[in-house]
Amino acid sequence: MHNIVYAEGRLCRFAGTDSNDIHKEMIRLFNGFVPSVENAKASRGLFRFAAPFAGLFLGLSLLLSACGGGAGSSGEVGKAGTAGADTASTVKTKGITLRIGYQKYGTINILKADGGLDKKLAEQSIKIEWTEFPGGPQLLEALNVGSIDIGHTGEAPPIFAQAAGAPLVYLAHEPASPKSEGILVPKDSKIQSVADLKGKKVALNKGSNVHYLLVKLLEKAGVAYSDITTVYLPPADARAAFESGKVDAWVIWDPFLAAAQTATGAKLLADGTDIVSNYEFYLAARPFAEKYPDIVKTLLEEANKIDEWAKNNQKALAEKLSPQLGIDVPSLELAAGRRPYGVQPIDQAVIDAQQKIADTFRKLELIPKDIKITDAILKP
Image 1 (tube, helix red, strand yellow):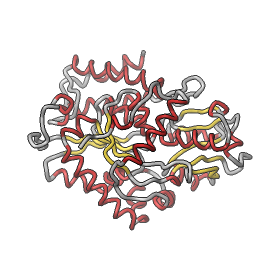
Image 2 (cartoon, one colour):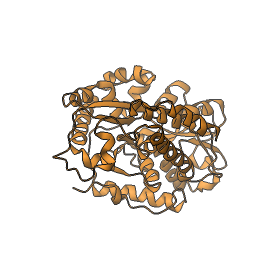
Image 3 (cartoon, helix red, strand yellow):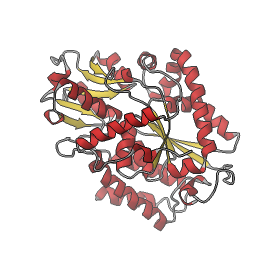
Image 4 (tube, one colour):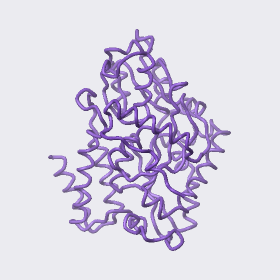
């Protein structure tokens, strides 16, 4: 409650200022509220984690109205949720701000480092506001409360978000990248197989792409999900817990996976090969995607262009990203070399794969209700 009072005080001081500043403050506060440790047996589903924060941000959104703040970005984008009657041909994009959420790795991150998308949209008098998040669940919570318009995550976050009622839609995806996530154990660990994780503490970012990887690897090894102790931590905290020996294993994705391998000599117990697809999805708030299809089209075209460059220039890519990410070039080269590139449309096979993940999480009671992935697909 003290945090909520503090948040209200901070946000009210933003009254009368640009709504972009207000939403930046909301995002900063949300990232600050992410708990550092959470035991799965005490809270099994992301919805139990996300619900209090969704309520908090709903309250903050109402507070913004009371304080005189807006509920969206400056210009027309902030009106996307209430302008459903507008058609794409009548909507003006000049002078709006596109709010993009990104993580420490992925094609959207390359787009930011390159600057090409900013230049392309600037030709149409469209600005971009970039906001970094520690993981997909936090990014989609920001999308849910209207603080960003577009973002990217792995497979699991949109499932948890959809189950929590987020108005998201799938736009496209990158090719399957099963080698880009895995389970690490310390170099001197006696753990030799996934079966040895029974009774052990395993760190992961709750509701992230590696959540499903862990479920499937345990299933294959004949270990019940309830037979391990999951410790929910964002990547930076998980790395610290892993190196200090507070957890026995860490399920993580690139570039954090590569960085830990390079810096600590950690052993890769298993990756996603023949277990999961590990897609990177481009996602948007439905009102924005429906109102601004031309902006979405431009973003995906620019993403595909930068993918083509990245595929053939992996060392240059690592050098470009290193200063921005604070990760060494060799680690980024390792990560870049084990992922494929190229923006692809959402097809039935991908929808079916996502539905399988959703059904698995529902069976484990990690999400509160059944969902249909088709409900989050844009209709032509």
